[in-house]
Length: 61
Image 1 (spheres, rainbow, N blue to C red):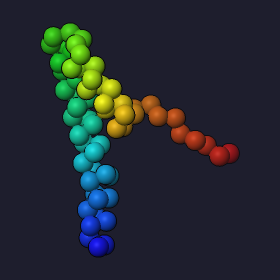
Image 2: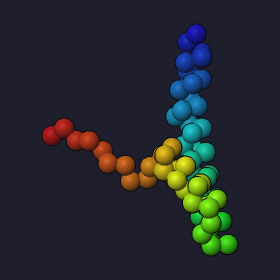
Image 3: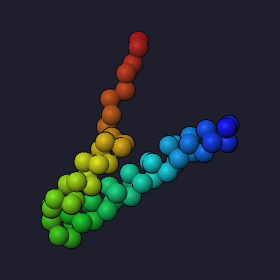
Image 4: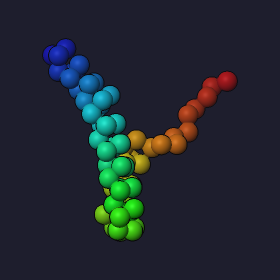
């Protein structure tokens, strides 16, 4: 059971940010080659949902 939790943590901590970065890079590449399209906008929005670049951090002081 503990191994399953560690595996889930590893996926969330490593695989998801890497996938988001890859999708963002793919979106930028598509827009550079072909201009803005529905696919590139969809990829960009999906990466914003997964890993927002400029997420506001809460500060308590």
